[in-house]
Length: 615
Image 1 (cartoon, rainbow, N blue to C red):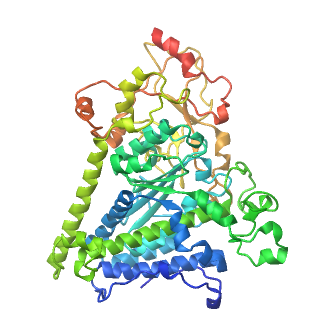
Image 2: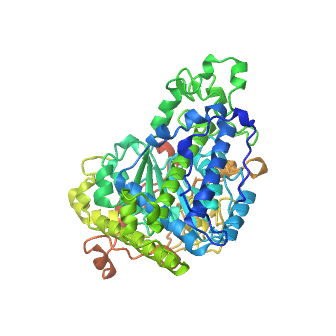
Image 3: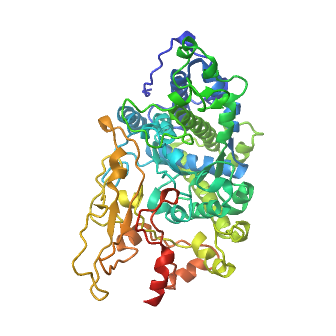
């Protein structure tokens, strides 16, 4: 089998003992048919891919690999209940069924070869994209999307050093072995909270095809003191067209079990604090502040200066070796104490990749038992579920029918889960009435808008980057389409580049459209030498200057309605009412001001409000 070559600079005798719990067990009497794709073939390919993944870990962590990536403590970092585990596996199984039904061994090899030649360490894992930013060849994709604040975006590091890029580099070749194109999208934005803007603009920002979306807003959502933000995010994720699995970081979802059972969602809680604790416990990693230069040189670069004085990336000499950008960039913006350096970003990406690989293996083994129930142990609970599908398939037609039946059953469970969510009460969520100053302050207002805000149909026009609607040219309707790599999308105009007219536009003859602007100084770190990515998140905005007079604009544009204006039933009779009513809510978000420092001359909505009421 052709596999992706990964560098392993150590000699074979330097390799730690391979963790037997990482092995994939190929079912007995399951010889892969060379002319077709079967679960036995996929299990074999997964075993090869996992060996390659382990070798890549050894190349980065050397003799510390077996301790760092011991299965039990690694998996303990990821908390999910039985309902979420089943939903997560179900999503993976539907992707695997796509491979079984529509792929061939030759196509698998082609995808592996393509991914091997196309992974770019600078951009964090390249893929062939069409002009809309979608993959051009294999339609069987699995998309991970990171949403979060500056630490999640990787600020202070190169874009390729962010944990999402590290996750993508690990999983692209492995998923390719199974006929699935893994796409990792780091759409985190510095300083942004999860709600209300990003939660209500979920599809327009993060895209329409998401399998897993992360929530990494611990710092900007005030450490959990604004729970209504997380609950709004959860509801909007469930309303997303693809109902993605939600991975959270930070101990904020204190009603996770309720969300799983009553909300029907798949939620994985990544306790990254456990990863930090492991690094400093039981001398897992030597303390760099206690080592001489010779001892440090014998450690892998990925672990040098990661623990000092019993703390992670804190204190001397760790502070002096936290970043690794000088070979590409001379800039040091965002290299602050609260942003993880490249070593923690890399380790985080590898830990999440480990969890995803273990989940993929479990999902594939369960799927094999569903298809071949006679091979399973009669007492196994999975076998009981599998046997309900019928006898062992013995012909191509029987196998095709089995695949169809399994797919229908998996999709049926997805529908049941979504109905469970739609019929659940919003009373279980803290909607903010007890969070004075950060949530709705009037119960009467809350009663009116809660259903619309949490589960109603929303179409959002956002100027933020990164954003699917801007990259695809849907929001601007200018025909400029691109990605964060080629930057061919519509940038707008530099701040204050438009001259003030001699005669302001009147109410009867307004100017159109609004001017979308960007701050040129923000783009100075967009790329460094050799096109190395540094950051891709920017807070562009619509600007109206004093003296320009009246403007007019239509929101949402027809292109936005066509792309994102889904008619989703928000539960109860909300959907029926929405289809037969022109009533709606218009929410306006003002310019993003880092740490509350707005540009001189900025006018707030509170200042504009009285004049709007007069017109």
